[in-house]
Image 1 (cartoon, rainbow, N blue to C red):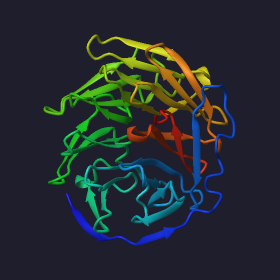
Image 2 (image 1 turned 90 degrees about the horizontal axis):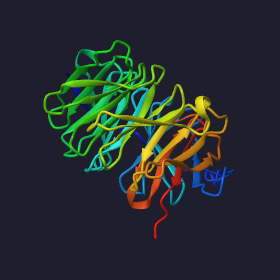
Image 3 (image 1 turned 60 degrees about the vertical axis):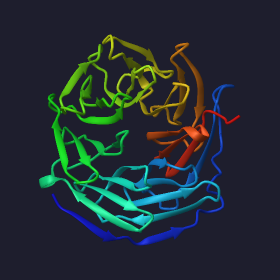
Length: 340
């Protein structure tokens, strides 16, 4: 495996004055949430997967523009850092030290950018495998970066100190590992978009176990975990939100508001263990809240810009906000838990 420390060109672009003009253009009911969106001035670049560690600066990637971007919500300023051409960045997260880790989806590498030193490290996948790092997540101790590789049908684990990569093959052919989360006990959970299964990985042994969901047509795409250990998922193909109980092995599911046409995609779990997801099937994406305690869909809100497709979200607990990127070339913020 090869890694290299590279210089990074820093380019600042101020967002236009109209960057926040998509504010709750329409709601579905009285229980809607406030949604603001900022237009990203790098057109047709699919800004996506925003992540904030401090609430002051929000990082995101331009999947079609080969850049790492940032937004300062207080001022509306937006800037970008150009990544190596052909990176096709798919996802990024920020670790406890403030380093940004980037999935080089089209170029078989994971990048690490240090804002403190303005240095960029490129960590190549061993022999180019897996070829497509997809969605990243850091474990609780900050020792390992776990990631899915959809096209390669693999799951990876990167040691952030040694840069060694462990590779786990998914038993089911064409399973397409996609969304990934880590439970409080360290168990790694992955949804397998190419089939009706989710997978659990023991972090100590790297043993993978597949769990088959009840419906043959289910295609789980994103995942979240509530405090009771339930593993929640959205079924993109047939329009359900579901929960798997690892203790009993049981599964419960609820049809999304727009049913089979809903195409639920991005999802997040808030501090009250409520499930939030986006129906991307409707022409104007629908931002939905589901309360497991009452088993009700208690909130629906139109995404002001339309959304196009919203693919991934982060819940930032200190401010009660969910951050998302939209194919309408915007970065969005939904306030789901107003501060007292």
